[in-house]
Length: 566
Image (cartoon, rainbow, N blue to C red):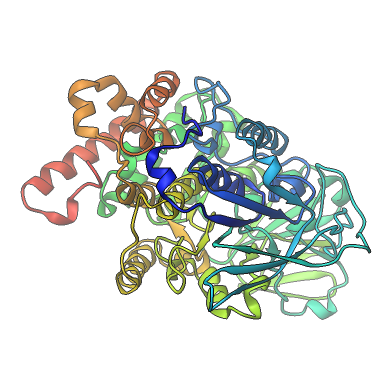
């Protein structure tokens, strides 16, 4: 593993002091990468514990990516051969062990709110004004930061603001900080209860009620499934198409994201929907061959829904759990794809259908990016944060290159945010350390515009709705190329074919970017790959067939079929 030794190169670099705003998973990995290269960090976290959104998430929260895809490349739970979906408590334990391993707690100031950030034109330094002693308690009404998995605190009346000076700012506040609760047509006359998913805790409060869930994202899907077990009736309202659905667990009991691999996403975009269609057909057939079961019914319904809206993992934001489909198939939940209007005790949809006697609405309508500490002095940074694609590689604020970075705001359509942030943090640290030089500002702006066009072309409406949406492999490979840490697939195919096979056919983890280049850990990466399982045989055969076809067509001169990094 990497050690905190000082190299001659590091001794030649001026030691920088970095302010990390946020102590969730993004803040932790950024601190680790910075301190690993000899930089000084100070972190301010609004909550009384590390973990960000998982400290305050509803009680039965389960992650939607498996332990393999969620974990960082240099911190293992030792169970790569038997991946699972962590609960919020298990993931917080993983983060805690990571923070202790890299001695990160000493850098974190808990219950501290960043009030204001200002750059000095004279010195080029950044002044960060903060206040400690913030209140943290579970009021349930959104008036205070919610805490479920840590101690609660009242406001400290004696706390006063103070200011520190730093060389750079790492914004790690996350995408789930400020809830977005729309005003629904007719809401003023609705007599039932309306809450945002942020204030949802347990399903028992909806016992024997008729509940409308607005939104079918990953939280909405899980919440629908939970509530449907207690409510007398559930309905789900979405705008048009839901996310491309994959269940957490396959019919054979294996985690589904073993198939989120380089083999699949090396295929060209032009083949994406075809790969999705053929795989869905295969899954429908296979699920019908086995003994009748509730899981089989759910899997067939997932394939039917995906095929009916003609989506694939290449072109649609993912919903990586089957919760709302389970509620539909097993407990009769209704699915409405229309806008709606509220009346005193009912919901009327645009197509004329109704959900009568509605008692409650749970709005799973997402969150918005907001950076109030930049509002006063740096609205240009606020704008950059609210529009991640305007930043170079969705990290570097082009107006302040190398001085302001955003972490955890690039969101893979399929894949996980924490490992994506690991690569972002590695690149940021290498830039500050002097290992990587950023291009001129005009070149960064040009690349950002090209990337923006690429993602918006690929994902269409979803790219507008989810501001930081990216393809997991393409985005990570792009960062890896800047750092010189791309896996040497050609050499591995010849000299280490088994390792090549694990990288191509196994889950897409960040260990592949530790095999070569700066700060590599080839022995550790190879050890992890030796334990990791690979994707399913049928899906692998289908996907490999498309990839080989694409390779042949590209060699014949059909450039639109050129595979990605293969």
